[in-house]
Length: 529
View 1 (tube, rainbow, N blue to C red):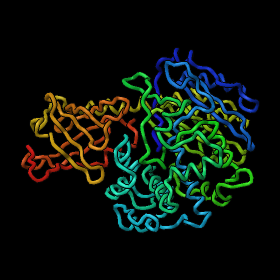
View 2 (view 1 turned 30 degrees about the vertical axis):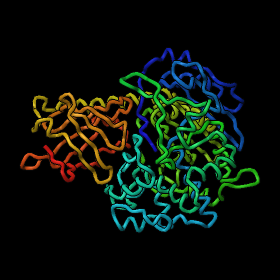
View 3 (view 1 turned 45 degrees about the vertical axis):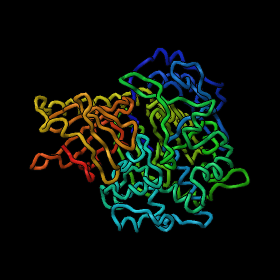
View 4 (view 1 turned 180 degrees about the vertical axis):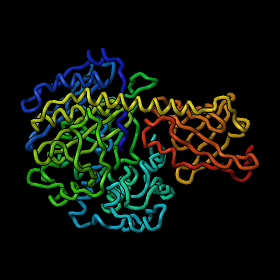
């Protein structure tokens, strides 16, 4: 999965500065000021701990931890500390399929239905034409993060049930016409691996990638992460304060983002990637498959960075198979980011320099991993000095300011003195959406409460906003995803439908509330008030 890297705010800086400590002495080869730079990153972006690895010319130049595993505790991050790598998992799923292409068991352009006959999308044409390649390239015609509420926040749906329900998600554009980041189809790709090999995606990744590379501590479940004696704790802002949070399970969408790993073990993965699949005398995948994964498949929007990030202006941007592709200072960059609740990260390859960098963090600040990555790239590219901490800090502050202004404008249009059309009790009941399923609204202590039936964390108190619109304030405040809930009435005053929309532009795209259309659900013997 790929969460927006939007989280920041200055809190507990003194504690973070005090808790900073390198876990080991840096070997020669990396930036000489990296320890001091990392200390500044931890402080400015309020990150309790991070780890970084650098590989160059087939060797590990640096594998090191900074800061602490958990805020308020002394245990330090080291090179073996496990973090959730989130959407950096996608490259492993693409590699698994590449191995099956090498073995002649599949082709990139096989129809998905050849291997998963039950697979179906909203448009029958797209169902018939969707290929394995399409599963990996974010060009399905579905909207950004479409269907993510089937698994996020964690649901009780199985992978099979998510695929079954996904057929009811309507497209946003025509097939293969536009880039829109997707998670669910990567899970479908993992199910292709299972269908072809008879092994779960999890077992295949462990047996065919982790074991040959010696990634013995890496795993694909929150249970395994929690059982580790050297694991980072995720952190998020809760009511403005940074707090440790509980790692959330992602097994039902595992091939899109469930791997947990350390920089020491990710360094082995980076070396194998830069060696085009070769490991010792053997191979994970062929050089041709490496070229496939690093070749542009879908053109992605090329943004125009603000002046303080002018060095990031690129001449091309595309998505390959499990990797993003662009250029930096005239070098081709193969990279990906990852974001979970409390964990964000980046993996970067510079093939022409035989260079790889991985940065893992236990706080939701993209500025931290971006600053570390570009400081290291500049060192190996002999580039002019750039104050990346200041630059990314400014971007995050500008993003927050824009969001605050948008919310202020919205509030200024609110008819605060309006009242709901109906008595509160008449909004209560069960509602159903074609792809998500049921939610319930109940009247408790004269207040409405919204509950998503398959998502335990999505329980929100409905506060009246205006007319027949309420705001769902989720009781788990770490979600940062409050949503408008609007009811449309029939001429007779009964409820026709209920729709939702983000309150803040900072809400992560995986909360795809805007795609839900709920209608009152009535079963035999049940009457709505």
